[in-house]
Image 1 (cartoon, one colour):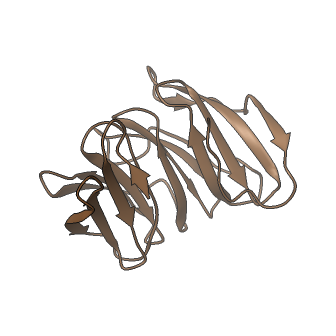
Image 2 (cartoon, rainbow, N blue to C red):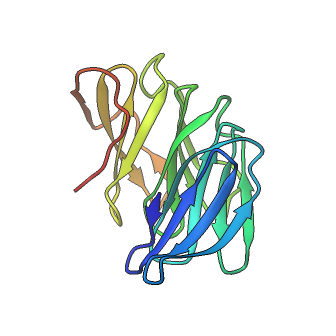
Length: 177
């Protein structure tokens, strides 16, 4: 689930491979969009009527909701994608079970920057972005949260990470408050 910032629109993504838009003011379903070939594992959005999703079909999709269109983005991951987060209206981050962390731009069909093995041999299970900044975080099955710098001018993720924090267990979700 993801609320469109500054609005009462909710986007949902599901195991049935659909992206659905909801009007919370009227408690009403607006529309459903389809495109993924497998279950959708994560969704995020920002201010505009756009959403980004990732799936176990190894694709990322950038949705233009009013136009009912989608841009299919592939090539960065070799396994199921578990997480996706927008940095701003055109940049977003994805993480995969192959341990790859990728930075994307909506004008490119392939990632702008990839860090393979971002958590060693562990898969990336969660990502977080500090909106409209260059700070991103990734969590994994290795019990660490790592922080990265996303240079949006050069469209690059900085490796090595800015640092890490040990967390007990498996990191299922991250969020900046």
